[in-house]
Length: 295
Image 1 (cartoon, rainbow, N blue to C red):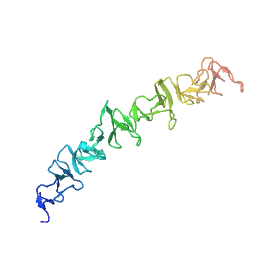
Image 2 (image 1 turned 180 degrees about the vertical axis):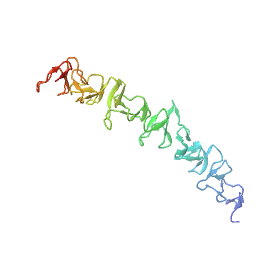
Image 3 (image 1 turned 135 degrees about the vertical axis):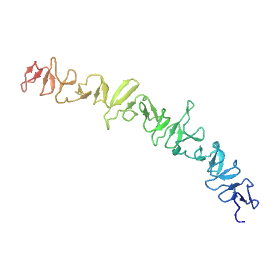
Image 4 (image 1 turned 180 degrees about the horizontal axis):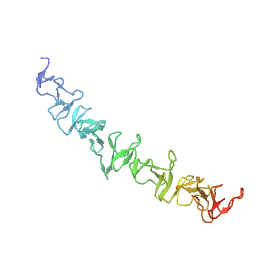
């Protein structure tokens, strides 16, 4: 007989077709032979009657590609250290299709990573593992809300490069960049000009527009709550300090502002676009106090 009948296996130790194998050999359904090691894609299932199986018969055992045996998850060897319930195998990387991540504490692919006072870990999509520190390449940051490594921190949090985390406030000497959601050492001017604004001694940020009550100083790139400076000479207009007031307004050196009208002891001089106390005499202009203009 060249081949054994269905459900019988050629046992080389006794040269006979047997329903079971001797000598700790496994029944191989692909060849109908008793084998020491199962073929690729099959695993020796000791618990399941010494049979080569594509899926281990016991739910708590997983196919080990190294030994080609069915093993408990704590026995999954390197580099196949994670027990995957989806494929029922020991795997190097948990499957993206199942949104599972290799847990370092359980040696298994889990939908949630360990997150407690004893161990904070985060889901890393680049490796499908639970990590204590998010990767530098690709650069990502640990987000407590989603318990994941994210490329951009969510609203009201900012990325801290030093420890690759998302924080609600930045470290000392760093500022919140609301455009990029990063903690930066200097406020950026490219591609959008931003201004340093000190909320208080421990919370500062970079803003595209200064808040109510503040003026943007383009020289120092700061938000100021005082008059625009006289050196260099700047005037407040549309919440920004500018060197030249726009047409239709007059620079007021007393208030350091661009005014639509000059009042009180000041006259509007169209030749210089300034509020003046005396009209220029070259060419001669005269003060018209009924309209507060130099005519």
